[in-house]
Length: 88
Image (tube, rainbow, N blue to C red; front, side):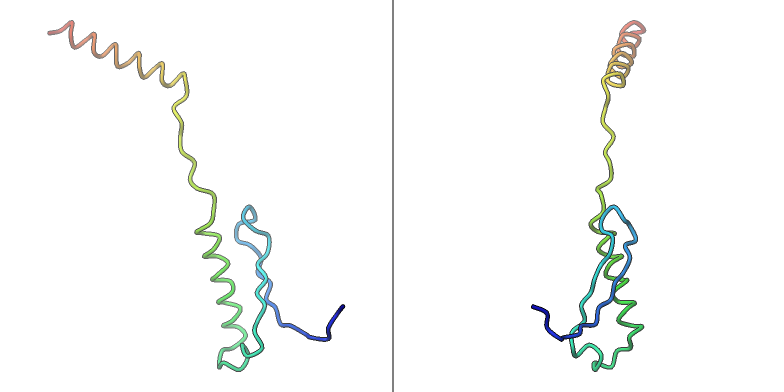
């Protein structure tokens, strides 16, 4: 069933497409009468979408110690320890 109600919406493209494609804001009926211009409403919607993308982005990737790096690091520590003990 389709009602004959028209809604005002703002569609904002995502600053980071990995998080979301579009943000859709449905305006309330009294949004236009609050003394706020339509440009200010659009700017607020863009600000909200950017803020969400910034705070909900992928966490920074942590570097993991690979097997080869661990072996080289261990060998270096043992070699340094051997050198210190040999000079003492």
